[in-house]
Image: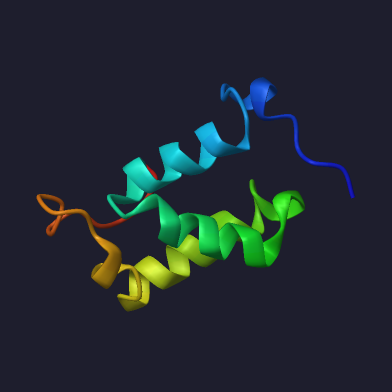
Amino acid sequence: MREPNYTSHGYKDRDDYLNNLADDYGVDSMAIRAIADMLGPSEDFDGLLSELEDFDYIGLLDDFRKKGDADKSGGVP
């Protein structure tokens, strides 16, 4: 399957997209990358977002929160 067109979504590339997701969720980018790599690029704009929302809801992202973002939750607006 082809990799999504990140520029059409406003990102330079996959790295830029994943880093932005990490910022949105207030977590270390390595946590986002690990989940994204398991699912593959074809799920970046669908399955990955669903997984992150689920993980955030049940608290699985809490251990990966950046310092200063301890009270940040809810994921992408």
